[in-house]
Image 1 (cartoon, rainbow, N blue to C red):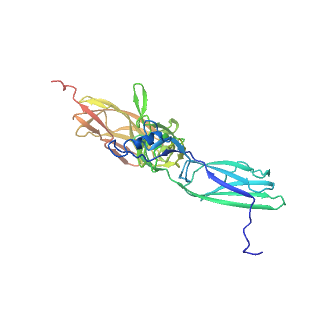
Image 2 (image 1 turned 45 degrees about the vertical axis):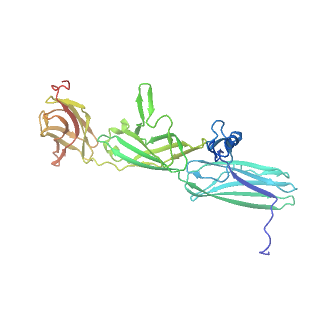
Image 3 (image 1 turned 90 degrees about the vertical axis):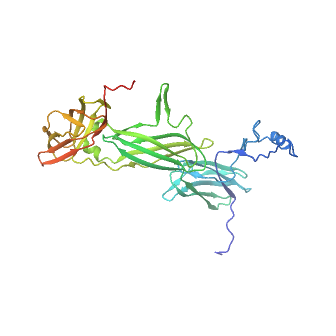
Length: 411
């Protein structure tokens, strides 16, 4: 075979075009003052131009749509659509035409063809059309491979293919922060930045929690007529702008009682983000499973179940503490209450609480009073495990506002 022979000429022609939404026509208005030499000539020409908006001719955006002039950008989470056409340019009948479209990424090869069966015959000047859709889920280089095989009228089986390379860009920058509360609640702050060159309409930003948690969105404000988003009625995110979303996760009741289980949970859930661009093109992005650093509670965890926001000076008030055994052994606990400069405990100190098995918890009602006004810290509780002779001290458990009921703000 002669290596310098001409390439095989095919009787079929393959065309591939990306399908995108049109854009608004833009023009460059030229204006001048009435005292200038052109007078109202430029204004009259713009009013007669069919592409301008009547009554607002000096705006750059017109009321007509223009077809895309280039391939454009494709962002992660958007749907890539392409039109594939195979045309018979010859004067002979072609048989057994098979059109195959694959998308090659850095990790996989996907078949996007609507049908894998061959077309029996294709007459001259006729074509085979196909439209493919694919939701882009990877960043980086993508290659659309279109292959065509057919049989000529003389019985020759021919085959050719074409490659179309494009880049998939990142549309959003998502950063997360976790805050572990004194209780089993976990607060998640999600910072979402639009790193594209066009504004986005944020249709939905939600958190899908893991099986152990229930989630509450903290992105709305309760009003008399209902709830309203903290970002307003029109949730637009301009280019390079950042927005913070806040969520509160609470363990489900069946898991909240198991302190050891919740202590080791690091998987929280994943964010589901849906947006729309200029002319309604929809994009969706789901993050991988978000993970936090598991909080270290030690062997014994002390948390508050009930505490008043405001108390009166030198008047006893009640709180309820929950003590949880986070270790893997049984404890025999003794509770001691130590007075501080501003907080005085009421009751017997050094009382035994009994044995507490692993992952079990008990609620202890306590009474105390404060002798100092202002925001006071509740401190001075001490737990001792008589089995190992080990002591656990708890300071700054919570804060309470102490007021004097005898003082009046009125003169």
